[in-house]
View (cartoon, rainbow over the protein chains, first blue to last red):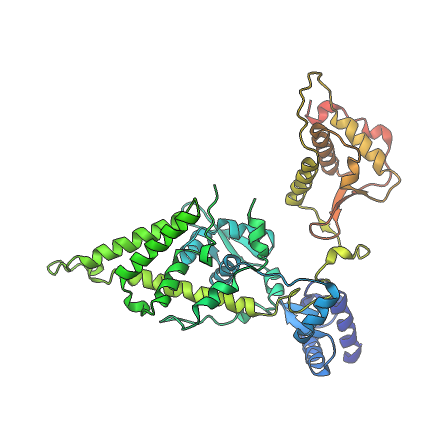
Length: 197
Length: 255
């Protein structure tokens, strides 16, 4: 099989995959070498990027997936009548702490946030954004948490190394105070709603 | 009991403290503890007036602030060269505040990313349930999903309030036969179809047990097409000889 044909086949396989599909799986499915598959996929990524078409091939969650370009957001929303969902601040903070500090226990999350986080963690578990990695080998054997592949997929990250770099602070950044207060208000807090039982 | 601290949208005591420090334009490494403590206490007093319950964390922080304040008022004991005592009592708090600030910003950065189903869209988003024809892949049904399904059923059939004295004998074995009957000649059966007519909770429980028995006996398989989709029963064997399934209630262990 010549590489042009293999490339076209790979394009089909990514298209029909529901979740980001790994190069390993595609190599297996096409009886090809992983290195070659990965190279062809990345060529495709570049081709879609340059084509200016309505689809992009992106490398995400350790795999490949077709997505719409950011610029088409409003049009897709108009067609699907979807209202953009919002995370509550509690959910985002907890998710950020787990993402950057994993593996981490609930007590460690709560120390960093300064508030009880059991409910938020449970909601994140229910949404499959966070998963239980195991139990920590200290008294009480607390559960340790980390992020899932769904987390990478949702946030469009190739892997954990692709997380935005955390800024270190030695003083507080100057910003309008009203901004932080206003932004969290009145939004559809998807995560929060589920929390109330 | 519930605690809701949505006033002013503070995520917790650290968030409130950061807000106060910034509002007063203080240097975070040189917090005027006395002023901050006063404002902090005033804020949680206001919160108390609006909310009945105040999360314990806010009170704990109040205690911490007062403690720090009292330690700063005490003269430094010069003759005791204890390392811990010489350190700035605010240091630990400052460290926590800066750490919290870091993740608060990190959370904002995450939220700024183009999210699948919000800014960018994949083929199946945002409504995979709208594509009923796409039965491509089956997931094994986990225990969690089964329990959820049972809960849904029980929720739909609230417990009847009248008292019934007559003892009705419900047979798991009989229910197994009924399920097999329903399933015969069909490719699959929706979990909800097992109990089409309104029945009592005990019927639901017996049906659920019967289904679990069938799974244990490897006569049906439980599959769903999508995560959190409807659970369907599939016969694990095609030919069933009726004699082979003369199930005795006792053998199931429910009698």
